[in-house]
Length: 509
Image 1 (cartoon, helix red, strand yellow):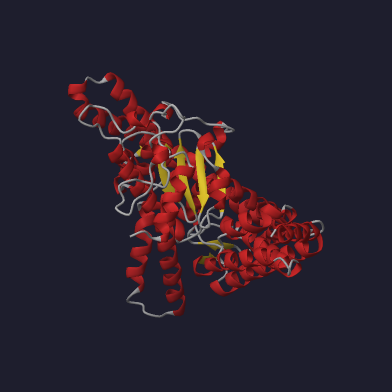
Image 2 (cartoon, helix red, strand yellow):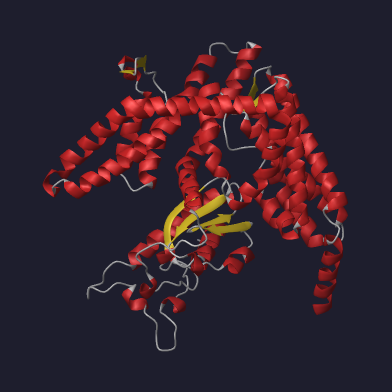
């Protein structure tokens, strides 16, 4: 039986070039992230026209389809199931040809794929499946991509799968801290501490596993070399006269170790005889990478991690208001481009060191500015029924820190309100940064949520009540400035244009 989620998945597949064009499938909190062979095969207009699609970002061989929280988690497995069914279509037949071989164009330019329709029994994969064997390419086409952007996206792909664990453990850590401060249920708090801290204690292993997987190595070997970092026995190892500490280097060290291990493994695959590969390659990969990790990477990554923590503390304590203004203003463009996930390693490093990240609450102010801007649009364009309907449906997600629906459905299409939303984010960031200069640090014990959803994760150095009050003040500032800037400055030419557009539509009807 077809469900709305399976229908959405079936509609998306042909619009991204068909199964043959899909290399990888993943999702974050709001986006279906597809690695594609050829971005030119993506039908952007068709995707944006789908009711479930809230926005689209295509760049660097990656197609990011914004579906919103909850929806993306349901659509992704349906999409993967369609790809699995397609793999069956590509299996060799008795005459040693495959379905792909049989999808060559006919004389009229159509293919068998063009004539396929999705049946109730699920024998095909999507409406008007557009698969053609002649279009398969050996290499991925990457357009309009710089090496830096590609690297940031690959790093994001390593850390994005870890976000659910970070959120869950962060919420438990916040609850545990509240119980400790209130002196309630003292017998339960040690158990909650163990539950919340277990994942963070071993997060380096997960990072190593995902890094090897992302860069083409054996995931288990990536996890094995990263596990060296968190092993308690490293306390017996001395480097440059300094005894190593378990966890030294954290996720950055794990990332570097697994990346090195992947290159060592690939080198071994080229030179080790096939008969010895199963024994020699894993041994050399773990041994050589493990030694380099112990005697170089842990020390260097530990120094870098310390520098990140010191820099973040100095930035907000010394130039807090200005730093908050800049960070709050720039975060929405990063979200729009899908590059905000590249900040996850920095957040994770700060959480490992200090127990919370001071950057996330500042960056969360961008969402507050977005909400304020959307409310101003709702008030000013009171005759625009379709736009107000969009705002009503997207506003709850925006209040909880999921900004893509409002970005792609409201502010970005209108143009100027996107800029005024950034101004609201800058004001909220400056508010929190100002209190950081006074010594009142506001942090989050996990990454992922923002907006109102960040309150259960808040932590700081001056008590939970003051921390929550400062964060709430930042949100209110972002709402107010985003609303005022949009109401008075962001809709000058928008309202007349929307009225003219509606008049033309009504006349056409």
